[in-house]
Image (tube, rainbow, N blue to C red; front, side):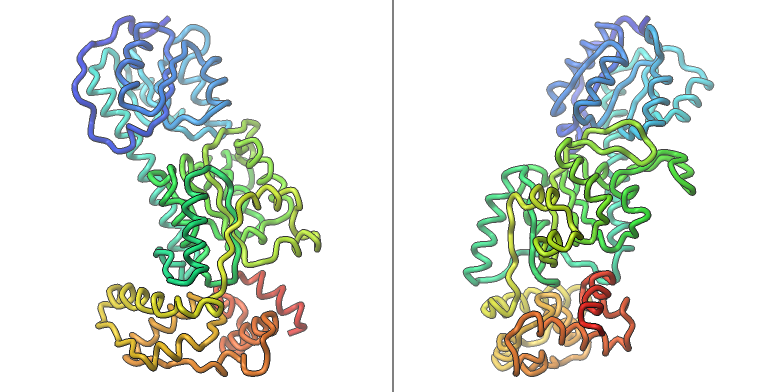
Length: 457
């Protein structure tokens, strides 16, 4: 039996909320009049509205596709809304829920909060009331996701890759911009390859910004920076009591990227056991929070990146072949800076403008001699090394212009030998501290350890 058999018919303008127009909303109420009222109210204002009469039908819908918000009646025949909501939360279902009821008392309100309702609206309500409640929930959820992602970015690395543009006049960069534009228009999984410092995250952001997902979150994840013990929980979330220390349920990064893009950087560093689970997520478009029996639908565009040769990793048994083929649908390879010296000047000028503004320092002149020396240098650390050189020059007030021989390239053109020399030189400069050397190189500690083992260093 429904709480309320009629609904008000006033229709004032909706709140000016940017998330409302993109929202997918599910209405669960056993009274046809209320379902019809909410459907008429929300359909012209939202991306998608579904309305069902009971929790069984609602369960089938949320098992099949993602919803940003559920408007849930409490008093229904069979199971109450609160009982169903409590069950969903125990199973790791994190979508926002507004409980509507005609029987409002303190006990019901407390139960609603304990069960995980985001808001509580008393029937009968005016159109503006429910629209304001929806706007509050969507805004709160968006802010929570943005704050979570920002905290991760700030805590993940002392030197996160800075947002920017795909800069350069070389034929290689023109081709990359063309590939980004083509891939951005589709939901296809993209694999970005290239050496450390070649702006893989910037390329991923460009894909996101040019895509239909651009209004939704871009969530970058450095797979090498998360320990193997917690990475499954970080990606998929967990329910209360799933493991020691899981005092409450928590959303995973796939949830925070819902409707947007999840960028898995250094994907080759994922543990093999998790690779199998990631493959299933890609194929089924569902994630299972740790400790839950329920799979939650996701709508996420996946971009992966690596500086490793995944074919070699597959041959060595360190990366699953089936996951490699699932990720390698559309590949964008970023060439090293030494192969496109004509891009050095544009990058240096961009970095100069960005960093001088950030540091509050006047820009240094990039004279012909400096630019000539920059163009001749092989930049083993790629664009990241160039950026660091510009920043150091701004702080010191003059450029320490590199020479070709500084990179150890005078005697060899072998790229693996150049990589070895550069990494060992940085390790030596860091006093043998591998964690610090990995930070300076822009690679994971695991990658540096593996390289040192190969070189018996």
